[in-house]
Image (cartoon, rainbow, N blue to C red; front, side, top):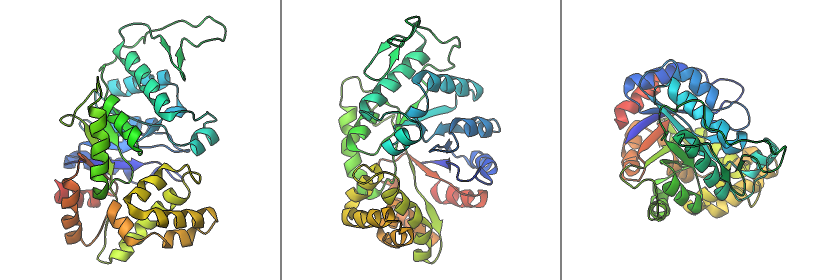
Length: 341
């Protein structure tokens, strides 16, 4: 199992100490560091800024949202950062959900799987730089259909450093996960758990079995964020994770259209998730947080005394996950490196 450092997305401003943590992660032998975006900071600017202070560690977006940029704009960013980093960039993409896409980006949210497939195909054509890009899909057209009629098929002025910049896909539902195995180079799961391992193994196997699948089990990467809280008081450790689970189950998506809700419901917590969501949407956030059971936390995070974390980690090492993504200050990363590596 490899280690990655997750800087996440910003809250009120840049996460304190992230630049130092990335430097330490590189020195400790971490394989990668990752940035994110929601509806505030973007994922590409921090990765370029912080990545300029590194020389070996890979750098990825987990995730860059496809509705934030046209496929060509995303491809331009990927080939630019890949050049500047001397071939260390990983483009992690995701469709997000209708609340953010329609509410923040002002874009429609039709058929996200089909749209993602078209988006990645255009990026790959741009990076291949074999011919001026022409694409006629349901969601994207190059040149644009209509308008002035003066659009011209173009080829990037820049020769990409790598025509095959790795593309990882953030996915939660089984169909989306299968598509990641079919068309991407890696998968970025949310709220991954050893309990969900068999479910996701089957979904990925379906994608690998499709004609023209890019990868196989041998060379496909699965990088999952796993919160780690070291505390002799297990309930106090769980309290550090409960607000995040309550937010994603209850508030990050509408009732009946919340992919995070569905992930945790599949772990056997459907009734609990309904209660958390009811409380959260009713404005009772404290009650929603309190309704998150400790077992849900322990299923999706590593918490408690260090010896317990070491024992629990063995279950994660037996899963399909290839990279453990963690966040935290330098001293914490040193402890994680000793425990995992």
